[in-house]
Image 1 (tube, rainbow, N blue to C red):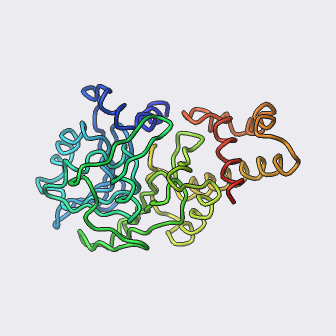
Image 2 (cartoon, rainbow, N blue to C red):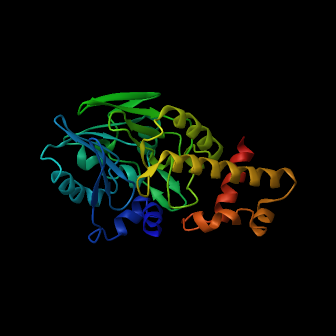
Image 3 (cartoon, helix red, strand yellow):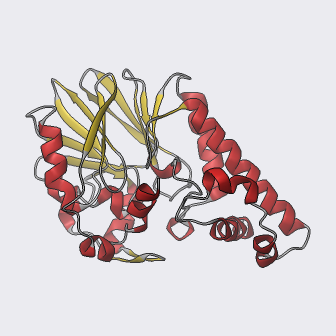
Length: 292
């Protein structure tokens, strides 16, 4: 899990350029139906493989594109025809330009907007993306891709991890890619400066859970394939942590007091391996609640 957290920590473009990706290996595993999972460094990639060709969800860092293409070539000789981005962060869209010669890139409209201007993040500056890395098909609510014998349903959620989050549901294969609205490395990174919201993330999960089958396989943005029950537990834990912080603030306590009292200590044994530490998550929740 620490490796996965490090991958997200290095999401800024400058860090990506400095890191040595030569030792990164791309691990491929079948999830269900037409869907495979590719893990390397950065966000998880889902690939659908079939007679129509390849479509992928997210594409990690640019220096890994050739390794990713080589891994995909072992599944099929056909090129990637579509890339769906779950959100704009560099560890999920960094390879866009390297797939754009054969693939149309799809994403929520806010992904394109944020990629066009870049951002100053706590982990470093992300420069504006080159034109060929930008999504060429954008949507507001969602879009369906009919590919490899099934409907691949990409739908936008209310702001959670960012304001451009998309969940991708492979309806026949019964696999759901959650992007970074669900991660398994611990306390999540909620990008408030990219329109994200911890409270909104809980509400977004409440939108997703009733829509997907109870036996669906869940691909998190980072981590191993999970279950719907895992996703429910994640959502419940988020609600409980928000409730603890909200109660403390309502009692007149400052963020510093809540951090000193270690109000999230009960979750640290499971959630504490994240690069987002408990004190950081307390501050994020408090800032989010203040905006509400």
